[in-house]
Image 1 (spheres, rainbow, N blue to C red):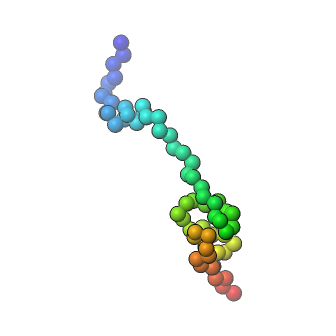
Image 2 (cartoon, one colour):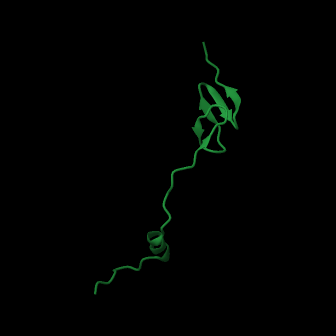
Image 3 (cartoon, rainbow, N blue to C red):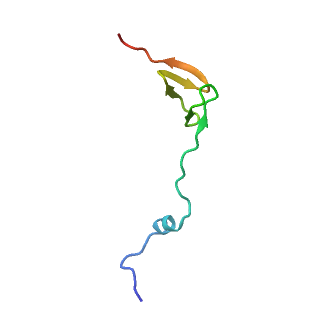
Amino acid sequence: MAHPKRKISKTRRDKRRTHYKLNAPGLAQCPTTGEFHLPHRAFWLEDKLYYKGQVIMEKKVLA
C-alpha cells in the first residue's frame, strides 16, 4: 500500500472534505431607480449616490 510521506493536518483534510462552496453575492433592487446593487451599500447612478432609495450626494462637475 502507498503511504504518505508527511501527515496531512486536520485543517487541510477538513478543507478538502467540505461541501460549502462560494456563492454569488445576493443583490437588492433599489425601489427608486430599479437598479440592482449590493445590499446595505450605497451605489452611484448617473452622478448621484443612492442609499435606501434616496439621493445622498451628487457629483460636482468641475468646469
